[in-house]
Length: 149
Image (cartoon, rainbow, N blue to C red; front, side, top):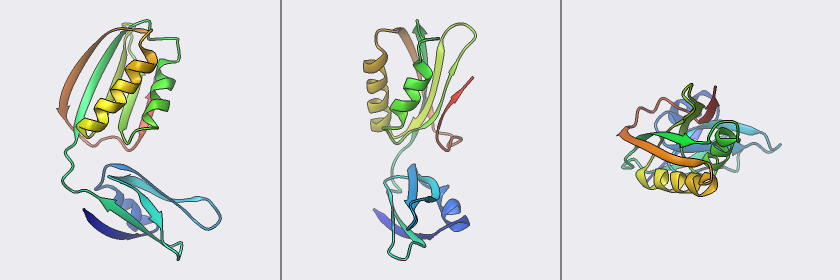
């Protein structure tokens, strides 16, 4: 485990490019002061200007591209997926495809992705008939989890 201190603003955003789960901090008035991706968390130092992040530099990342088939469009599948992603330190997208399927592209640690996909399938199992999963190396192209059209 490596502990680092980051200044607020541009320095924090630059440092945020090197980690893996969402980083946030609040100023004394309750507003979010910095953002990025780290392995664990960011906490505000007493001065409200310095944030401390714990990041595990040995965490392996992977990408999963999952095509869901069934009654998966027009039932809130994408927005439920985004809500579930908010409970896990994952990044990626979910979007409808023209052939009636839904594509979920998600990146994170293998354990995190297993948990996210298990929660997703448990929540939406009555809509899912089949799924195809491709496991690939992470590209780190996403900064959060978004719904796309």
